[in-house]
Image (cartoon, rainbow, N blue to C red):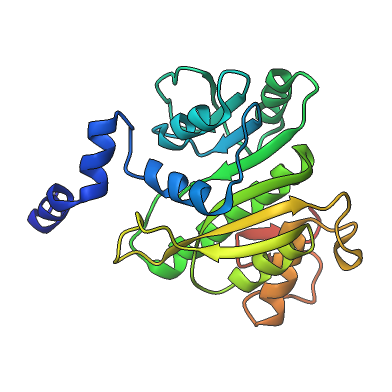
Length: 247
């Protein structure tokens, strides 16, 4: 741990305030500021918090939805219980995790899907940004499978290649799509949040039959990130990962 990191964290007012108020992470104030501006969460809503560890956004979600709300947090990491919420340890990209979420929903549709998910950082910005883009896009596709018409979606994004493709895919699925940087974000961070409101009953015509992932792949190809090979048995190096054309 560097001396500079330690000193910056000691001076961090959001960290101190989070600790004094009982929030598990300073990021709780990012969601509170998003909520103050956009009023996404209402009492008795059903909320899914993807990448919930250590639980700060889940805590805020429980506060905002009240006693009649339903809050579900999911993360690969083990997360200590949050009073008023259900916590799942699992991979959101796997069907068994989706099944567990649907069991807890018990026939309800989600009103809001939140994601403050971050990749395990490598220290190489381009790599970390590409992984973050994949996670955000994957979470958008998950949200579209469970989010009620009129619902909202929020995900963290890092500025870089492919972001415009994700924003375009979101605009095909929601009537309002905005970028927003909460005051609680660190000044040195390139993160911002994509805030999407009023999910359309059906995606716009150009997106029908396509996942957000596929649309972002198309965007990456259009800006020269994907490398397409003529041989169908060769792999394509995508902006996200290596995939086989036969998959």
